[in-house]
Image 1: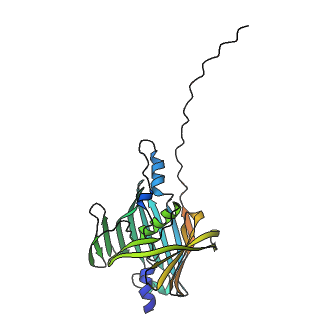
Image 2 (image 1 turned 180 degrees about the vertical axis):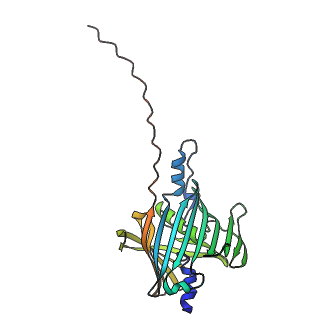
Image 3 (image 1 turned 135 degrees about the vertical axis):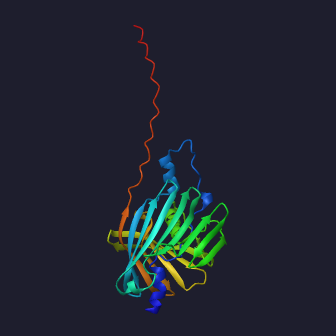
Length: 284
């Protein structure tokens, strides 16, 4: 159990780190406030995102270890919250810190995804073990991570582990093909490469789903992560797999999904046409 404990305390907390910002702020153009209705502007800022809750079954080293539930909520037109709740099963309930809740509050606007506050709380605790504030005006990340004080300069496009997932899904919905990713870590900014590596149809509880497979890896790292993203579900991953070299360490497979209905843009009122002047009758 020692080796499993080392990984599960981290991995059951949510989808493994390795994603990062895929937004290109220069590629997005802000809509004109005078002409774009509020609902349409919010839809454009979200880049096709819709609130959802997805539950994955987590398997590690051939064992069913528990579940991970990820919930995306829209608080305001531009503020969103993403929450990860891990729930171990069986003997894995004995793994210290495996049951926990991680939350990321973020801004999503035409400039991209920017994390504002990240917290990590073990179940039963009143106070988060980690709290990081992202101050984009001062360009600093400050707070505490596992008892370690944090005061770090931010780089453009940096995400936390959860906002990175949202940034990736948003980018794919916008037709972007990101090639590199940046994720905040208490030891510095992590830089990952990212590329599509194929397509596959998976059998899921929602039926057969066509997916595109994306590969992520930190430079010279032995571990890599693959994501099977379903375009029909707005590129939400239906399977995630981490390998060390060629050996699969763990997988997450979609169990169920609830998505909000797509927002309805306000109808455009037709411009009334001017009445046509009556035509004089022809002379006899």
